[in-house]
Image (cartoon, rainbow, N blue to C red; front, side, top):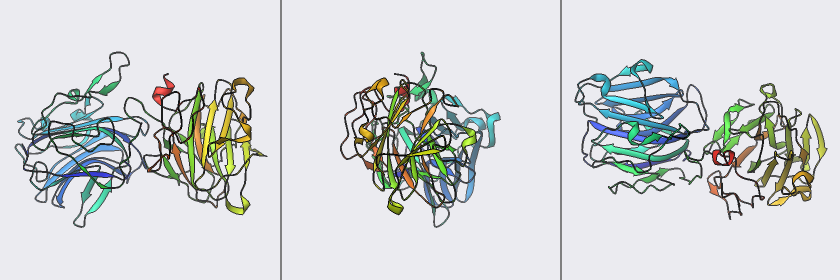
Amino acid sequence: MASTYLTRTQTAGTSTRKFTFSAWVKRAGQLGASYSVPLFGSYYDDSNRGSLYCYQDQLLTYFKSGGSDQFLLKTNAKYRDVNGWYHFVMAVDTTQSTANNRVKLYVNGEQIAVGDLEINNQPSQNADFATVGVNSRAFEVGRMRYGSTPTNILFDGSMSHVHFTDGYTYAASDFGSTDSTTGEWKINTSPSVTYGTNGFFILKDGNSVTDSSTNSNNFTVGGGTLTKTEDCPSNVFATLNPLNSFYSGATFSNGNNRVSLTSGTYAAVSSTLGFNSGKWYAEFKAADATNWVQVGIVAQNPTASGQPLGYFSDSYGYIGGTAAGGVNSLMNNDSNTSYASTYGNGDIISVAVDCDNNKLYFGLNGTWLNSGNPESGATGTGAAFTISSSPTSGFYYFAVGNYSGSQTPDWEANFGNGYFGTTAVSSAGTNASGNGIFEYDVPTGYTALSTKGLNS
């Protein structure tokens, strides 16, 4: 749902004083002081608008009516996890006599206490909202607007099981529950709630904007491309990690499955999830690969800042590119050796890591290089590297990078969602593990890097 928003025009609603919004959200994009992640917004003009969003990594909600601020709440806590899913709930009832009961925020099943709010400006009793439950006013998921022009802020990440109840307020426990075995907060897939006139339930088990509630309040895609993802709260897939980018100039998009690396220094970006046992498979497309670009694996070593893949003993890179006649080499421990083939723009590199036998393999556009056979076990037929069994941090991570300070490559990762950027794989290969969708066949015994894969 990167840079995408959904919209629906409301009718005269059940209430302009009571509503609940619930969504499961996986953040993506940049993190920092000026970056906002809108969950929903309602806008008529700059004097009449409202939104729930992450701002400076804190959860914030505000509403305005007739040019006056109706309420503003902002959490002390910062929500910077770009790997896991959050469950955000906002419950509003301005008819409550106690001010602090009028707007409640919940994160992963826990209500944010008054003492944990940096700002707590509650609405006046019986306040009516100018943009919720009002005929002909838009309700937008994944977009917020402000200003007279207006300025548009779009969501980047993934959403699932998005609910809105018009005229009824509910707690987080109506939409989720604690797993008795794992102790984790999990989705209630069929909550028993009343939706009211403008209520809806969308993005249930996929990218459908068709209302799954008792209403028919379907949404439309107002902008961007809404893609289906295998990544969900019950099976979290790896993405590229902006919190572990070894180069601050990286720009992330498409749910953190695309990264643009600017020129000026070496760059490496690793995955959010790591591994030190088992067999793992991922695919990477060189979306803009000139000379000296890299793909491989790396141990999360804090001293690696500013160094390319393959600089350290537990860092392994496959260098390619199309400029200057192309390059093709392997790099480890700051040493290069020639390799089978180069790659360039549009090529897909398969990476298979066998941690049980300490072998690393590379494939190019569906063919394993150097006659490699990732299924050969301890024999390691055609393996590009025999990797260390003791990575510095205890774990390896998939990684992409730039080996030249003058290049500005883009990389797209498919960790199993079945997309490169917003383009679905052309014809999914076979995958015996049943975990993830890839362009090419997944070697037997290998699986996608996800929580399901890690726990199998």
